[in-house]
Image (cartoon, rainbow, N blue to C red):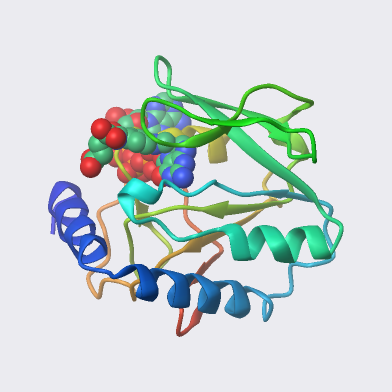
Length: 187
Ligand SMILES: Nc1nc2c(c(=O)[nH]1)N(C=O)[C@@H](CNc1ccc(C(=O)N[C@@H](CCC(=O)O)C(=O)O)cc1)CN2
Ligand SMILES: Nc1ncnc2c1ncn2[C@@H]1O[C@H](COP(=O)(O)OP(=O)(O)OP(=O)(O)O)[C@@H](O)[C@H]1O
């Protein structure tokens, strides 16, 4: 299947989810994450949920991170050059939705990409070797290309992997793990 077809397929699968399913599955994904051997780090990057796109509710993961006293990093997206700027999430961080309904920090303490140790990644679809397909603007491909090699890349998905391996380009960066409500995939 082409990337464009995969996007279409998984957007409609997501659209069919009820609010209750989204909450239950988001909670299950957060619980699965606890099984991973990634909790000895300090700097964790997480995305804030685009509710309008029926994304995974990352509040459960945010709760885990703050319970473990981790540094939580969130981003602001620049839709002119598809770059992301990262900020530390604190009690004082003001969050505002941008034009794409992505909740974003207004300002704050900037964190460099090189400081990030674990990155939780939104996606539409993934395959059995760790390739992912996102909304197609390449935000995460650019962002992950600037992370350290050791940075642990964890995809989060409501759905199981596609059986057919995606045709990847040299820009595509593979995941180390992908976590679904049912399972942990390690690549
Ligand atoms: N929560 C979250 N934050 C994220 C991402 C993500 O997938 N989820 N991104 C991951 O890369 C980047 C933002 N990527 C985006 C790329 C395109 C559109 C977009 O085109 N939205 C259109 C139409 C959406 C559609 O195709 O249905 C719109 O809202 O009008 C939104 C976000 C960075 N931050
Ligand atoms: N490291 C990079 N530097 C410059 N351009 C890039 C880089 N990575 C990806 N791109 C460009 O971004 C565009 C979208 O890439 P792709 O289709 O892989 O996005 P995606 O992974 O589905 O989306 P996203 O990363 O936003 O979730 C492509 O035109 C690609 O050439």
